[in-house]
Image (cartoon, rainbow, N blue to C red; front, side, top):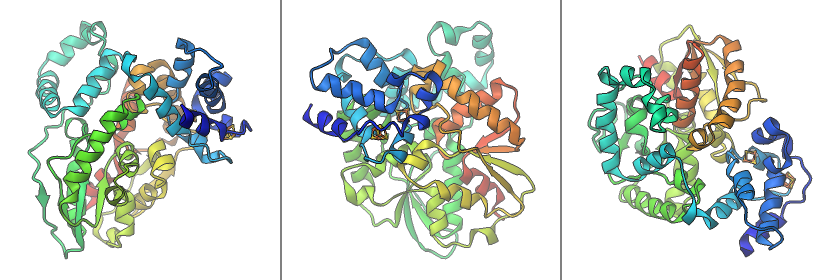
Length: 400
Ligand code: SF4
Ligand code: SF4
C-alpha cells in the first residue's frame, strides 16, 4: 500500500498524458485516462475511496500501452503502479473463458501440446467451417479467440541448437514464447534462417517458458517470478552474445526481470540484426513492393527499440516502407485485452485499419505476435488484402 501511495504521489496531475491515451481519446472520460486512474488508485490506497467494481474496471480498462509514460515529465512509474494495484485483487479476479484458456496455454506445456493437436484437427478438416456456420465458437465464449486463427501452419520439431552457415560471429539464445510454436511458427523458422545465415549459432533452450507478461498484467505477480527464474536458468548455462526475442510483448517483460545478467542480454531481433554489423543488404534480393510498418507499443514504449524494424526493412532493395501515422498509438491487442475488452479493442483497431488501408501497401509489418493476430483478423473481416508479417519473415524470404 505504501508503495502504491508513493508511486501515485509522483503524479503532479499536469494532464500532459491525456492526449496520448487511447482509452481517454475514445471516451473523453477522465476516469479512463492515466491521470484519472492514478487519482483513483491514490484515493483507494489512501483510504478515501471504497473498493468498488467501478474503480477496478477503470484500472482494468487500461491497455498498459505505456504511451502516457513517454510524455510524463514527472516520470511516474505508471505500469508498475497499475500492475501493483491489479495484484491486490488477483485472488478474486474473474476472467472470461477465452482469457482463462489463453493463460492456461501460456503457462503449461501440456496445454500447449493439446492445443496444437486440437488446432490441427480444427483447421485442417471441415470442422472450422461447420463450427463457424453454426456459430459454435460464440456459443462457448471462444469467438474472440477463434477469429484470431489464420491458416494452419504445421510446426516442425525444433532442435535446441542450429549452427551458423556463415563465418561465426557468436551464439544467440532465441526466446520463442508460449504462443510462438502454436500461432507464429513461421516467425520462429525465419528467425533461425536469418540469424544462422548472417553468422550466429542459435540456441533454443527447451526449458524456456512463457515470459510472464500475461500473468503480470492480470495481477498474478507470483507466476511472473516463477517464469523469470525458469527462463534465466534455461538461458544461463551457456555463454550467449544476446537473447533475441521475436515478440516485443515478451521482450519488454524479459528485460524487466530482476535477474539482470539475463535481462541485460535481451534484444529485439530487428535491433540485434542492425547492431550486429552483418551487411544484410548484400545478402537480400530486391522486392518491388510496399509495406506499412506498425510499431507495437511494447517495442516503442517498453523495449525502446522502434528504429530497428524500420532500419531492417530498409535493407531490402527496392522495398517502399511507410510508417503508420504518429496519431495511431496502439492497435488494441494488448495481450489478453483484445479478448476481455473486445469492444474497446475493436474501436482502437478500426482507426489503425483505416490508416493502413489508405497506404495500399502489399504487407503490414509488426514485431509482436498479439498485434499481428489482432490486426490480421481485422483486415480479414474487412476484406482488405494485406499480408501481416513479422519483419524477420520478409527478410528471410528475401535471402539470396
Ligand atoms: S503526465 Fe505524468 S505527472 Fe502529468 S498527469 Fe500524467 S501521469 Fe501525472
Ligand atoms: S497505459 Fe495506455 S491506456 Fe493505460 S493510461 Fe497509459 S496511455 Fe492510457
